[in-house]
Image 1 (cartoon, rainbow, N blue to C red):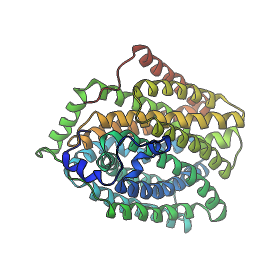
Image 2 (cartoon, rainbow, N blue to C red):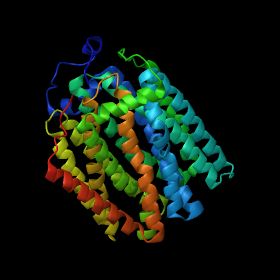
Image 3 (spheres, rainbow, N blue to C red):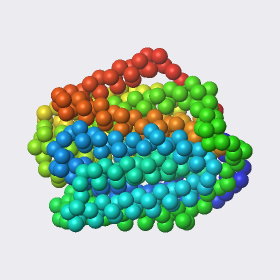
Image 4 (cartoon, one colour):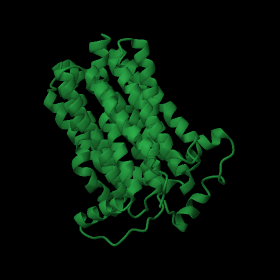
Amino acid sequence: MSSSLPQEESLESTASTYPPRGRLARTFSALRYRDYRLLWFGAFMSTTGTWMQTVAQGWVVLQMTDSAFLLGVDGFLATGPMLFFSLFGGVVADRVSRKKIMILSQYAQMGFAFILAMLIYFEQVKVWHIFVLSFLTGSAQSFSGPAYISLLPLLVKRHDVPNAVAMNSMQFNLARVVGPILAGIALAAWGAAACFAINGVSFIAVIIALLFIRIPPVTTAPQRGILDEMRAGFDFVMERKTLLLLTFLAFAGTFLGMPIVTFMPVVAREIFALDASGYASMLTVYGVGSVTGALLVAATAHQPHKGRLALMLQLVFALLLIAFGLSRSLPFSLVASFFAGACIVAVISLYSSLVQLATTDAMRGRVMSIFMLAFRGGMPLGNLLAGYVAQRWSISLALAINGAVLAVVALAFIVRRPNLDVSR
């Protein structure tokens, strides 16, 4: 990020001098900034609620339909809107206050969570209700996502951008640990409706944080038509080989790798005969690994050669995905999922921070929307394909094939040795 002078001055008083002393200080350096801290804790509370709903929703859909394919359809509908709306969301993020976009999105998602809670509580829920609300929630996220991710670099100095991205991954994955634990307790004690209701309440935390943070002014280019601005974003990415490669690698990682999360309830029930709490425990182990990976990236965020490290970790993740898919030992699968979570989060954090450093404030919303289109858009497409293979053959075959293809992709780039660390 090419920080403007006003932004540097406004952040100067909120953080100590660079670099922070001591490994602990370097690991959590982005939390030295007041506004980043507020947003981090608000987002953590909200994301914890979201993971409670994710766990409950996956289990409810599987119990209602007994279909791995329909579970994949729900995953597609939850993340699919990113394919349709994120590019528009990126243009809007560069035009309108990112803070306002995010607040409106949080209110919308809160409403959808409460609606689903009431439908389940009064026993009126149908699977199509879940599908529709998944799509609406995903649509709201497709506008708030580019605004949120492009907001983070404005809250810290340039040298702390990689740490800010890694710390954001940490809060997401720490919530992935806490959320399933709370979901398991809530499911056993009060049922799925409680998980959706708690998620609705959790949005209040991030709304309060957004109301209190101060965002430095951003110099924007003169506004043109939406399609023209969208085209300008694509031109910006296409003209920079590094951005193209990072975007493709992020797509490959999520398209082939994220079914490990979506279809974990299938693995838990069909391979290991676990109940809802057992599934939540599996997801928690994966989440603990994810937090570990995010912490490692945060601790080494100021080190060079991030691109090479990301490729190596992507290869390790691919091999772990194959092992997880073929395993029939629960302890081994838990170990594999722990390290898989650590690797994939580290990979995505590294790719995201490299993209952030290679773009400008004025283009950040559009560039990050394209990156998110690849990163998050790969999830629904991968879920549909893996769901089809799992339904027709087996979830083991689906995960093993995905891991093998991803290993080939990672190896090809490792052999080619592209320079992914070039910033603008």
